[in-house]
Length: 314
Image (tube, rainbow, N blue to C red):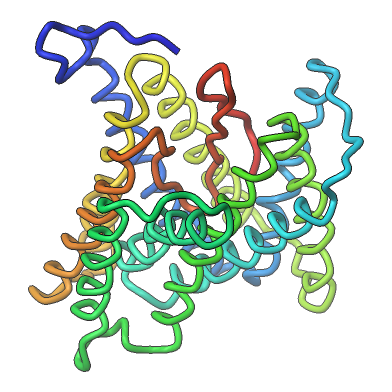
């Protein structure tokens, strides 16, 4: 994909993508807040199921319109991607209920660091200086976040970090699948497997949503869709390496929402850790055309040979 650039090479001529990227980050933060409220009114397993099932319903017309076959010789990879992504979603939703909103988002946004690590270990990519630096910064940042008096030093904090690792594994698997599978096929297989798998635990605790609960479920889907539409438009106007760092502004929006809605306030040590992890994520994102960090309940951006492909899922 070709993007126009000024002579300085710093920003494209049409800088409207900045507003779109910021709006997208705000929508993902609002989506996280809606997930927290929905999980307080419904069993978490139910919120996860509806998020996956509604996403699958939205995908079916796309599958038919593009006439993509679901025939695959890589079902084991589809299964790995779906189960790791689904596990990341469960843990992320759990973190949203028990941690500060910005903390839960940040722990999941460690996924680019894990992607870089898995790409080296599994896909045999180069262990570059940027990746070494990002890993060092993230380790120091996590040490600051999980200091003894921090609220993150808990089961919820550990599970929140695990959501970032599992999301990294899922997206690394997408990179592996994209070498032979159509992007739409990848996300449809995720929708099918995750819907079936998330329906099973829901059977033991099903609760039919009432008026307000339906409203929050719709809000989760609405803000997720708006965020993805804005992100897609931003990617159409600027290179991924310039748009990606703006994904981390979602942490600021989540912090503001958490403060005004629930009175959440981070400590100075936690803020320092957050900054280091953010710098680490941006370092990885700036190294190559890596999609912006997105929560598991958002829509993944899949890169193809012809550019960035955004398809509705999750």
